Length: 397
Image (cartoon, rainbow, N blue to C red; front, side, top):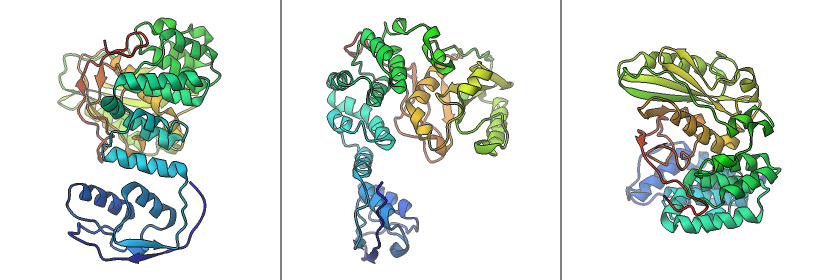
C-alpha cells in the first residue's frame, strides 16, 4: 500500500431508505451494509461517520464494499496502489459469486500473497463455470513459458488444489529437477502425487537438502492406534502458532494450556471417539524428533504438520505456507487408520489465513469452500471420491 498521507473531512449525508442497526465500527458497518443491501434489507450506518474510518482505511473499505452513500470524502488523495485495488475488486467479486474467467484470475499471479489468496479462493469456481480443459490449457501455457519462477509454484499449487493437470509426470519431474526455486520444486513434487504415475517419478530421498524435503519426497504414514470399539465423532483442532508443549512461551501463550486441556477432556467425553491436535513442526523440531504423531493422553493425539521453516511460522509469515499446510494436513489426516471421517475441525480465527480448499484427489474433502464460521468451526466433513487426473490431460477418470 502506498504511504501517501492525506487530510480530509467527511461530510455526512442523511441515509435514504430503511436503515439497519447502528454500529460504531467502520469495518463492521461496511460489511453489514454490503450484505444487507444484497438482500434488499436497507442500508447500514455508522454511529458517527465523522469519527470513523479515515484515509487509507476508508478507501480500502469503499474499494471492497462500495462507497458509503451517507458520506463524501473531501480533499482526499488516492492512497491505494494497483494491488490494493485488485485485491478489493476480486474480494468483492468473490462475495458476489461473480464467475470470473481463468484468464481474469491468472492475470494476478505476481501480485503478492493477498492477491494469490483470493485467486486461490476463486479458482475452483472459475473451473466450474468455464471448464477444466480450458483452465488446464491456460495453466500449461503459463507454467511452461517460465517454469523456474515463484509464479510457476503458485500455478502448480492451483492445480494441486483444484485438479487440472497441465503437465505430464515427466514434465513435472523435469521441472522439479531443473528449477532453482525451492517453492517451485516443492510444488512440483506435491503435483506429482496428483498423477497416477507421478509418485514413481519422485527423486530418491537421498537427494533432499534437509529433513523437510525428505518427508515431502517420502511422506510417512500416521500410525495412530485408535480404539475402534469406541463410537463417536473424531475431532481435529489446530495450534499452528506457537508450540503446544511449551506452556505460556511466546506465541504459545495460554492457548497451549487451553487446547491441550480441551483435547484431553474431549477425548474422554461421551460421543467423542478421539481428538487430533494439529501443530506445526519446523526443520529444527523434525531433526530433534522425527515422529509425525505422538499420543498426548488416552484418545488424544498430536499430529505434527511439517513446515518449511526453522520453527513454527510467525503470524506475519504463515501465509507463505498456505498451500503446503493444506496439502500436508489433508494427506496426514487421510492416512490415519481410523475408518470414520473427521467430523469437526476447530481452528483459531488467527489460523484461518493459512488454510485453503483440500487438495484435489483428497479422499475426504471439506463440504464447503468457504472459511470457518465466526466461531472458527468448519462445516461437517463428508466423504467424497473426487476424480483423479490421468496422464497430462486433466480429464476426470
